[in-house]
Figure 1 (cartoon, helix red, strand yellow):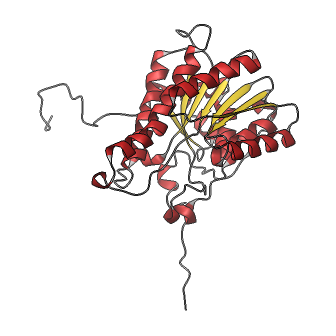
Figure 2: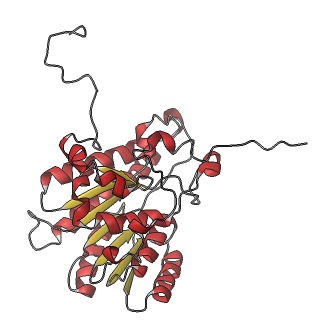
Length: 308
């Protein structure tokens, strides 16, 4: 007779929880029905917008009264299905569907040109959800071209979207708007069986910091979606994958506001309570608590040894 094993659904969430309150479901501060989160008059562009977190985010923004939603993806069928769902939620929201492979630079460039053509301007917010998780393999088992192909989506695709978003603005040297890059807590561990995903996501996280430092007028964030039961989720994680997929879209409502400026260039998680986090915004900003650091002991002042 089989015996059920009790599991703690927060076993993988608690170690990464920065706030005492752990959020795994929508709550009032981030709901699209909250008047402070209204996106009336705003346009959002979402990569990976046909499925999973990207599709959920598109529906969230429809509920938040967005003026326009542009959804991108490599497969047209799920994009069209998401577009139907958006229109059912809010008939006033204009939807633009563009079949796009973010690893192909010319296709990304076309997306932003088309957005300007259809809407007369670029998006106010860009949410980068397009990503791929490679099959479990060690370095010697994955060919160079295959590894680079995954990197082209998880790293190059992010760069390409940011690059063309900036360059289609009237003054690329002083761009404006908000960019949210979906990331993963897997960047914090050496997941040796996924050398493309871990490295690609880590480079994207660092890119967020580079862009933030380069363009003071542009708002950019890295966002952790928690553990979501998407089709790409690893089977061993499913018992713990309790985070609502809509929470990432709801957090972008928060991140698009000036009240989130203390997180610019930083990493945020859907599991962290935003109101609790705001109480520590001065410390977060001044100490760069949510940004990457290099080798912990370096720099040490030079020539003083480990016994200093």
